[in-house]
Length: 222
Length: 342
Ligand SMILES: Nc1ncnc2c1ncn2[C@@H]1O[C@H](COP(=O)(O)OP(=O)(O)O)[C@@H](O)[C@H]1O
Ligand SMILES: [Mg+2]
Image (cartoon, helix red, strand yellow):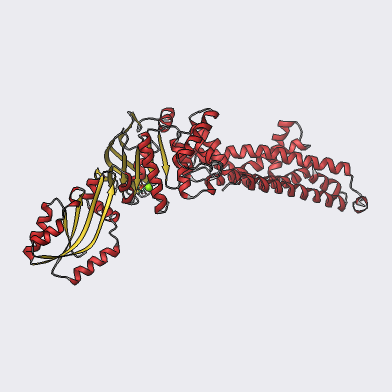
């Protein structure tokens, strides 16, 4: 039945490609989550009237974030080819996509982290300070827990965007469903392969969105 | 306990320098409840934040429990803050933590072990009357309950001083009274020094021993609460006192009405202390002088230092008789103030 509808689909290849897409998205999401929170916290704490208020650091970090956020992803991949080659010795395969995915997504997520942290009630941070909390305690026990729903919904949006990025990275040879759709589907004129790859990408996106929404609701006690 | 010497706090704002606290000196004794009252923008919050080093004074010094808070920093300041805790108008609880976890937070900061924390949290929940609510989240509590959590959290590390920044201003009158009673209770039980700021004289009257009145960054009047209530000096203090004695606009209007109806007579406001409340001064006055007296409004107020009464009377008769009658009242140690048209 499926084989009649999708005569040209090689299911083994399709499964491998799905795995690669999930792998690239998962690794990039985890690293983006950590990096984005780190950069977001630096941006937040160096803003005016905050614990590390520092105009220069804030400006430099903010500029870097803005620059990388503004470069179109496809251009970023090309710009990063030498860097990736230097780092991994190749520009093919799932791992080769990771530097571009992370550098593309982390600044995007860092902005969302900054917005999430700004939403925290200033009074709560002040209360923690009045109890004698160290900055590290404020980060771990106030900033992150109090902004968690927004941090989770932000990383969900970012992960969905990353699925799209992996598809683009696939076109220049990084593997995954995008790569399969382009090489086996588009270039060989096998529409059924392109269609199946698209369906699987959508399934991955829906699962990410579902998990993200579930956790967001779960951690929100407001 | 707290010694504030000539502190000034200047903020640099876009519109130039702003003096939020202007050369204030205060001394607060161990175990007392000290109130600071003033209208919004008077500099009260800035003042109280200087006491735990959340703000640094531009000049002057703040000594709390023998330590100069204005010069402390880093670990020293953080340690000092564990003994100077604070509660807030909007409670400032962590919504991500349950009641128990909120109360445990300062204990975590102080490095108290888990078993010790659990024990202390249980005691505190009991103390503030929240038994059975330990697993609730702040969003499931009423305002009064939230402030109880705030108080429990503030008491966790056995502080020496409790700072209250408008702690009851977001609560309805009944809840305000129950929170004030809790504070008074804690003050008596553990001898905690409390500094509270408010814009409601009612709060001062209810629990404070002494009061300072702030206006535009300056302390314009300070003293025992009873004495300030009976004999306010600064115009702003008079305003606050009449606010607390229930002298509403409605009453102002009825005074105006009486002044209009009896152009000949005078309206006097009498303030008397506890001792004089028992003597029949008014009837003595009517007997001795040829005057007619009409009572407009009367009220007795309690403070922690004793009670006092205020009475508004309309008094009519020959001018020199009226004057003699008013003199008589003054001699009885009753503060007499003739009210003119507003
Ligand atoms: N961080 C700040 N920067 C600049 N101005 C401030 C700051 N905090 C308070 N002020 C100003 O100081 C004055 C006193 O404020 P505040 O102490 O909050 O008064 P209150 O608590 O009596 O309402 C106000 O005019 C306020 O705008
Ligand atoms: Mg204030």
